[in-house]
Image 1 (cartoon, rainbow, N blue to C red):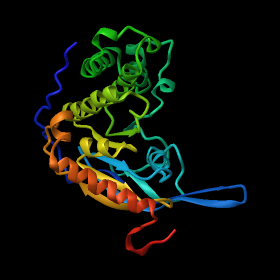
Image 2 (tube, rainbow, N blue to C red):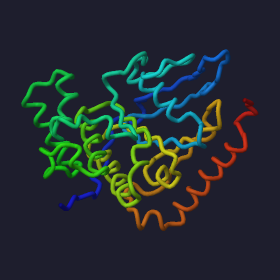
Image 3 (cartoon, helix red, strand yellow):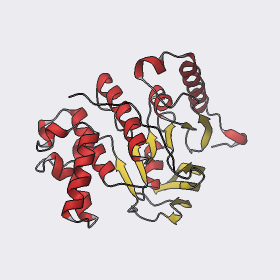
Image 4 (tube, rainbow, N blue to C red):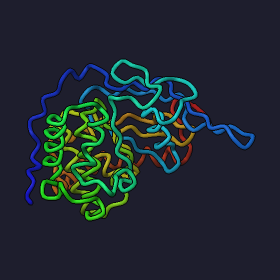
Length: 281
């Protein structure tokens, strides 16, 4: 099946309005007689309609940060604000796509039923659910597999189901936690293009966490580079690539190579313990 991945003209809403505010976030784990500071005074803002990626060295606390933002983990200090409201539990305006997509899908339900389930919990009527589910299925290229079960699909197709479910929910902010780490390189490239295509079509705000520098630069409008633990923002890198991107042409440009080099350089600094403003662990 051929899918048109040409991005539609991106007509943003009010880009000055913050969809997500992370203010002075701190997370300390306590146990076995000691405290471990995972995240320290982490602050950033994502405007409505942005696609922002987060990268950092291994163990930088990327997943901890995302779980705090999504309300799945209590913060020690600071706050997360979604659409002007403080997050104290998983908020209704947020959807999350995890790396372990297989565990998030119900094997006894069809693709269509998996996507519909959160909409039932949201209280939408049957006709409205059906319309939103079909729109999401078509958007991720699963029209011919709508009545299949997840175990009948490849890993890449299962992740498309998880993405479709999140998109159908129409969240204010979509969080993605290394969603393509478990698929092969070709499938990963296809899914990266799918994310940008859906971002254009549905105007959703996306926060995408990845360990892959190339992926972050290819996908994002901005890349937030994290320091080593305790985590702070090392740099907020603006991605100046054209809005219309392709795996072959974009990745072959000097601009892409320069941006990739810069982000890689910052991560190497993070690994060596460099922290902004003379901050120390």
